[in-house]
Image 1 (cartoon, helix red, strand yellow):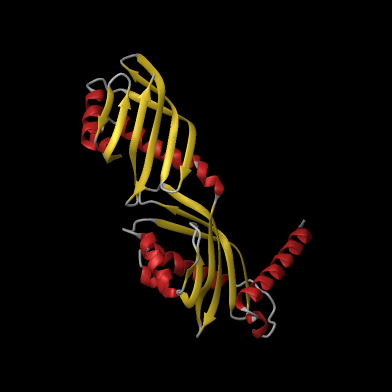
Image 2 (cartoon, rainbow, N blue to C red):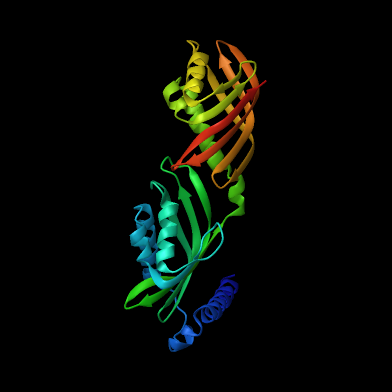
Length: 278
């Protein structure tokens, strides 16, 4: 088993070297044919620097980690070329800040002044909701003693399109506020122009009106609701949650179905459309 793993590792390193040679136009050969090695200290150093800059919301500090002629391929596709353009991209991506990114290197290889790192990433909002995850590869090059990103690519994990853990987190936020009888917290989960449709009450439009509806729904009975997800679809800043609900109130139980459309804006998720029916 160890021999098989070692063989795969050697093949992977040879593949990486071939890729680096093509990417940098023969720079590997120019490094004097130094053997491939694992440099955990350098890997940890560059990973920490990148993560710290992103999580601080500092686009300028991020840009300083890139070579002047760097190329970046973000999860959305397309190629961003040059340090200045890359800074603009990350500045827009960071937005108002508050998002937290975690990079977990899974393998790395160094040869001379080149460092190749690949691993997985995860981005979460300020309220700990996972916004995206996937894989990344970065090729760093040492310039004047400093590691700089030369090329990188970020890929979304296709499984994130049905990320049950994220959907459950959103669902839990709603249930916790409802079951606490906290109309203010529940209202805060809705977009200003949200629409709530219930049977038989019809439609309620607007965040404040929806808050008043739920406050009236609580009454003095202190109802408790359990939501059970049956279907989830996530794509970018949109999350579609669908499932069954059960409300217990004064010894009586009501069951039905619900659909919620959440959208992410300003680093927070809000409900834009919602339906409840029996």
